[in-house]
Length: 136
Image (cartoon, rainbow, N blue to C red; front, side, top):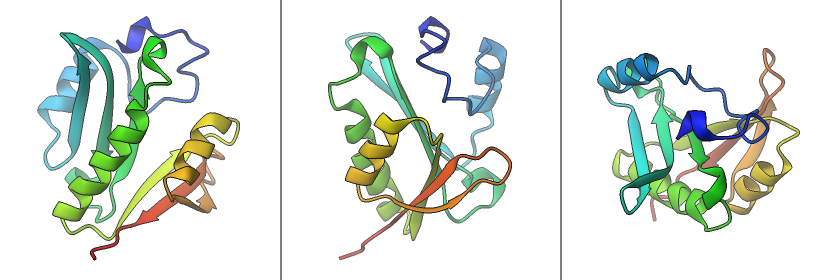
């Protein structure tokens, strides 16, 4: 799925190397990190991840990619709801994500999902967003 996307569509999504062996290794060594696929029938149409727990971080980093031909169906919003539920179950206080400042669609979506910009990554210039988990 990753390699089938147009370069323009995935230009902001660079969490790991897209080569098969790299992905197999990443999944085999995921530890407490979570990678969840979204399927329509037998086709992988997207996935999201909560990463950082494996490396000892208390606050996970969320990332998502939906197949270009399946955008607009609410799959990213659905993955955000599930990610928030997973973090609640794990009693995690916050979720973090980073987004390129030019990715206006993603920024709007994350802000609508109650993520607040809290900083800028000095190395990449990406905007840092957090969502505080409410346990009520």
